[in-house]
Length: 164
Image 1 (spheres, rainbow, N blue to C red):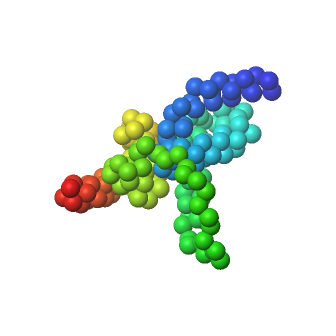
Image 2: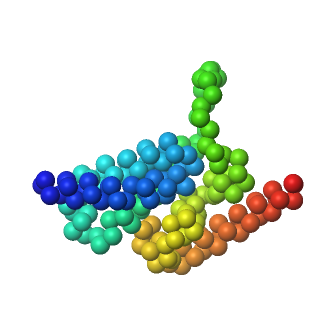
């Protein structure tokens, strides 16, 4: 059991920077990214022996868990939440340096699966086959989601450049 804990700790130490980057690209901010990574790693850590036995690429397994968790959270929270009173603004929170970048804003507006495909392909440099395996979808779905996402990004960025 101690060997499994050490093996998991080594995995987390080596994979954490990439998982945080992936989470940031999925969620749009570093705080939600850290929460998403922590949630996925908690679930995987509890089943680490089984994960290592069943998969050859635990990083892909964790990415898939992150994408699934993010999509599930997005589905639960995308509905409008009505409140009785408008909350008070608390100070000035630290802003994301990329918050006002047109590409980053357009990327944030993509549906979760399209965003995951784009991030894995162009940010993490994975092949279509690796993306399909990571997200548990077919290569055809990867291609179609990437095509739709790129078309959407082009149209949004074209509008931004025409406005300037």
